[in-house]
Image (cartoon, rainbow, N blue to C red; front, side, top):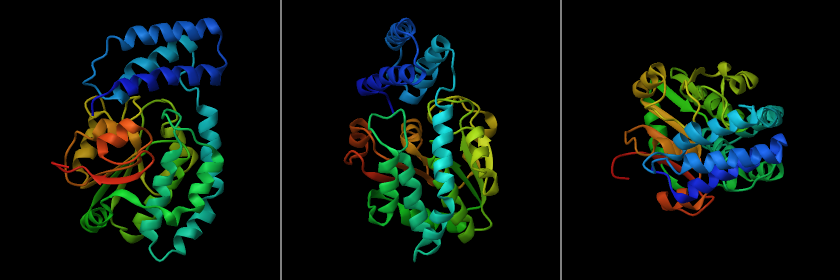
Length: 293
């Protein structure tokens, strides 16, 4: 989907968040902001914001601040937090009458963990949402289509989004493989660190290889920009009968790719995204990205 003025605000906000996180000097903050304003004035609004974030905002910050992975410690904290809960969450899923459904709800709850979005969240909120997982309703709901397609699916590409969330993704994939043991599952990560998005490092920390083959897009965008992704990643994307893409960044970058079996699973964390889908802010979505919808 095309970017908007609201997305520009998020780009600038990210500079401020990272400068505070790294405690950089006032001079470097001003240098970064001035360069960001200059570069953003040149961008095409026909691009998705994940493209702009990767090609402009993150590039400038990495150069000026001298750090291309400022969220490294934060990511490790959230991955560790959720991994410590893994057994308890696994038991919760196994005790459910509908294990697949609960595992999916658990996975979409994890999408609240996002250091790029406009909403604010905390560990307390995350844990509270997990406790209330059974109360989740989807404003747009293509679950039945997903279950039906998994019945005949031979290859699934599951594209991850954020730290911490990746642990809940692993639980969902584990549950999928319990019901559909013959599905070959790939888990997609970013090629390099960007914001708190998942990389090979995160996948290794949570031992994602226990349930899926981890594959990188080959590039650093907070989403999936197929035109810039590696040939290997594109091949797996196109060959997979089912693709589950988590989060707003993947929605922004893949929503124009209309095809059966492409499921966009997210929490609509800003009004621009919510309005584009036709839901309320902070609604849960699972949408098959078919032509005409």
